[in-house]
Each structure stands twice: as structure tokens, then as C-alpha cells.
Length: 502
Image (cartoon, rainbow, N blue to C red; front, side):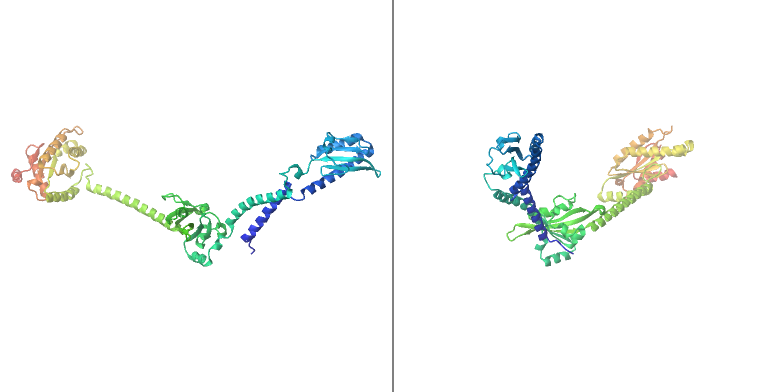
């Protein structure tokens, strides 16, 4: 296959440019031979007009003769005047101002600006045809008296310098810059899996290895001489600096690493590269270019995105599971009627809190509460009203106790309140306020009261179950002694309850 080398291309371009300059010089009248061409044209024009004038004279048609003279001046801008002079020296016909334009004519001799032609009839000279022309181009526009040939040399020199400078400046970009890279270096770079670009200090591509050409889907001939930044890259918007790493390496002389650069690939999306750039320094430490290494991480990024999607889906599933677990935990630890903790949750919470308070010798109290004559409410108003009364009592307890306290439905119409950090005096005050709150409520036209028993870990309980037992005994004491009251547990109260039961 025939290949046009850069040297051939450059030679053809210079020849075309030189020919163009010569054509331009010819057009403006600087080329050699322009005056002779003008003279030849004027001679042929004069001969043609002379033959036409001869015909008019032979016919004796003065009107036709005058018309021919005037029309020749009008149609030819270079003709200043025309006249026919008789052999005796008198003018037979003329155009305006002919005497003025013919004043400089030489006698019996033609010049470039004044041409004479004899008018012959039957072999005899009848008259003389006179034509006055504009000066020739080099005479019309003299430049300090400089000969046309010298002007041509000056024109070609100046215009050639400017034209060749622009042309060579552009052509040098397309000369084979890869020739400066030894074959062994090129072969070594082609072995690498990463793409490699070698750039000069103007950021123009000197070499691109095989891996990068495959990634870019371009030929080396297409890339050579082009600026790397003009290939359509753009720095990842997530990067701190949006400047190309190879440009920073050239500008700052510092190695650039780990810069994410993206390259749109049309319908195939985009390629993602991890780019490192190292400046190339000469023996004096001056920057001569840079080597940029492009690691294609498109596939890796795709897998990372897939992994991120899977992690997000897993996190969403985990969150859904946790939500369900919370719902199940809530359902497992709550009483469905009152939304209070149930008895199972009460004991799980109480055991840990009681042991911790006992180990740190902290205050820890317990309240047991019961709705008075609740069976009578159920029997009189029905279980639906009874359920509303139970919910009213639970809400009253939650409104009075502290945020840190735990309210649990112990069973039926009975409730238990755990008060960590509260001494028995404070617990008794809270129980009294709960009693007053319940007594002040009316539910579906029904008013009820509550009985309460209060105890504290300071009263000698050594286990959570014993603490609840003491509070329950104090509650029983309240119910046995008139109800609608709060009783603090005291030692020996269990024997009094036993006697009452007998």
C-alpha cells in the first residue's frame, strides 16, 4: 500500500504555496512580462480599431467614423482618446481632449502610451489613426523608482516568509513525532496493560501505546500531534481539582496520582480511567513533557456500583427486618388493650434493673395498683365498658409517672409501676397522684377508684420477685382497709394479711 510520508506532504504544500504567491504577484502586476503582455493587448486592440476605421473612411461615413472612435473610448477603460489625422496634419475625427492626451506623443514613432497606425486605401496612405492609452502598470504606480523585478523579489520574500511560517508551524504538528521514541521503548510500552501517553511540553501527543489506542478506538496517526486535552476527556466532578493531571504535571513539575478521568464513548456510555502523570525533565531540570498512564477501571467501577447497589438493597432489607423485629418486639412486650408493657416484659426489665440498683446501692421502688370493684363494673355495664375503664386507668398512670418509669399491666385490672432511682417517699407521692387522677375520671358514665401498694428496695427485698410481693401485700392491705388509698409496705404486714384471710 502506497503511503505518503510527512516529507512528501510538506514538499507538496510548499510548492502549492509558492505557486499561489506567484499567481498573486502576476495578478497585481509584479510578475516579469506583465508589461509585454499589456503592449501585445494594446497592439491587437489598435489594429482592430484601425481596420474598422479604414472601412468607415472608405465608405465616407463620418457618423460611423465618429461613433467608432467614441465607442472605443467608452468600452476600453485604458484608452484615453482616439483620433484620425489626415496626411496634411488636420484631424478628420477625434474624441474629447485628444490634443491634451496626444501632446506628449513622439513624432512618427509609437510608444506604449501613444500608438500610430496608417489608414490604407487601395494601397495608399489616406490618414493616420492615433490612440492614446493609460500608462503601463509599473509606470502608473511607481514605488520610489524601484524596478518591478526588485519589487517582485521584495514581495515574494515578505509574503513567502509569512506564508511559510504559518504553514510550517502547522505542518510541524503533523510530522512523525513518534520517530523520536526508540523502537525498544515503544515495544516495552506496548507490553503494558495500562494505556500510556507521552506528551511534549505543549501537551501534544508524541506516542500512544497499543493499550490506550484500543481503549480510545483510535489510530496512532490520528492522535499524533494533537493536544491530549482535545480528545474529549473530562475530570470526574467528584475530584477536588478539575484540571487534567498531565497539564498540572507540566505546569507544576510535580507527579500527579490517582486522578479519575472520564471519556464519553457515544452509545457505549463512558470509560473511566485512573490517571497518573509524571513530568519529563532534561539534564538541566527543565520540563520537556510528561508521561501519563491511564488505567482503565470502567469494569471495576461497574462492579463497584453493582456491589454498592447490592449493599444498599441489603441495607434496605436489613432496615426492613429491623423494623419488623421492632414491631414484633413491640407486640411481644406490649399489652394489646392498654399499650402498656405486659407481664413478661415487666420481669425481663425488672430483673436487670433491680440487680443493677442493688449492686450500686441506688434507690428503687415499686407500685402495685388495682381498680376497685372492677368485677361489679363488668357485671353492671358489660366487658366493653370494663375495657374502657382499664384503658382509662392505664392512661392515668402513664400521665402521672416519670418518663423513666415503667408501667405494666400485671393481669386483669391490676398494674405494676417500676420507679428506678425513686425513694419510697417519692414513690408514695406518685401513687397518691395516680389514685387522685383515676378517681377524677368518668368513663362512659362510670367512675371508679383505685387501691395502691408501695414498697422500696430499702425495705429489705433481696430479689425482684420479693419486691413485687411486698408491693402486692401493701396493695392487698389497702383493699382490706377501705380501698381507694395508698399503703406503704411495712414489716409484719404479711402476717396481718394472713390473719385477715383466716
